[in-house]
Length: 104
Image (cartoon, rainbow, N blue to C red; front, side, top):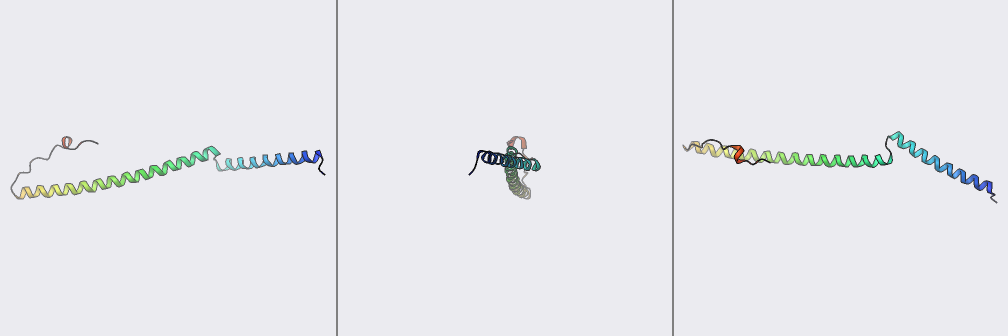
C-alpha cells in the first residue's frame, strides 16, 4: 500500500513535472522571441499588413483604370478638335482646368 511518504513524494514529483513543463514552454517562447501576448499581436499586425497591401493593390488598379479612361477621353477630344480645325472652325482656347474639373 501507499504510505504518506510515498504520496507526498508523488505529489512533489507531479509539482516538479508541471514546473519543468512551464519552464520549457517559457524557454521556448524566449528562444523564439515571442511571448504569448506578442504572438497574438504579431499575427494581428501581419493581418493588418496583408489587408493594407490588398487595399493598396486595389487602389493602384483603380488609378490605372482611371488613367486609361482619361487617355481615351483625351484622345477622343483631340480627334474632335482636329475635325473642327479641318472644317475651318476655330476650336478656341482650352478650358481652365481649375474651373471645369472639381478637386477630389
